[in-house]
Image (cartoon, rainbow, N blue to C red; front, side, top):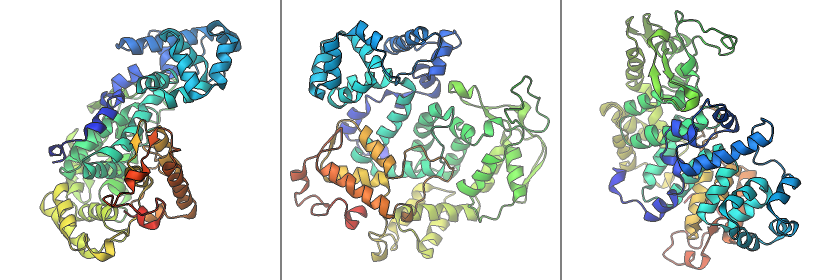
Length: 502
């Protein structure tokens, strides 16, 4: 088990600042609100955060909201000269704008905290300089006062990069990335901004080496997945009609998005032998699987009034009428035991860890293990790792690293010390893999071909030069130590093909 490996204390220390990683959806909504939610707090429609520091931060945003005659606060709006002169003298304003980062920080520290917060909120242009030179605590305050809702995503993405660099449990991290990508959700879609954190922490990460059937049901019931593929609004034909002007806009009725992706992307594969009729029948089985208050970070709920309780037939198997919530569970049982599912999952794992075109003999072995063990992911992985194909000359160095893998291994190769990972997170996005932001449910491809193009290779080499030259904000490298013979990557240029594959 991954938890038998002692985690790197350096990583645990760096993750402490990212406090959103341990909060559920409801807590994230309350503590890291959007400007519209701040407006609702002012109107008494939402509670203020319980934490005193976060409540004070929200109250400052509320004050800005009031000063702008009811307009939601925009922390990135150009500064108001008259407002600035209430805080600082012209010389102080000039110093904060034109001084070196160290000079700006030194002056900033002389201010009382209340005035520091006002400066952060009133002078967007100085935030980056203060972030680059300030303490982790100061960076956190700047992030919160610059727009608290942005912190939730930033924490997720930074944590992923930090774990890829520092974790002692690298197989767990690889599998977490693989399964999140397999059951992809888009972090920028509405309520998913607050639901993805819990999705990865509670649904994906604990089950990366468990039974596939358990992982499948956990994703099916996840509010993040229910919202992303719109199943939370899917209802049976006899469900009560919505009232009010917004009823038609909500598009309530049978929604086939989840039913289609469940078979095409999550289990059987596009050539798995299902029909459009199966898609419709599966969608009927999952009506009533919904979310209690999704925009408040709500949990899974089954609503029997919204469920289609009629008889269904999925892949030739009859699901009797009146099954309620169990209809969906029966579908998951059927799909998880299909030979096509065993083959499809085995191929995706082999593409990730062995080769873009895995040997058929290896896929046969893995699929056989999948079926014999009722989808035991650990046993499937062991079958793959113990195979001669995994260790063959033909599989050695055939895979090109994804942007995340390339950035993480580059930092490790030069003994990089990451003070904060914002720039690395942005670099991964610039290389074509914005973390948690793959819009399509397909997720990122496991094939190296997605990353093998001239623009991507040039961008990788440019990043390598910046990293080696200590020009990546938040990262300090020790080239002399990295060049020691004990380093397996010593002597390999960061942008070289061999480095890309190691």
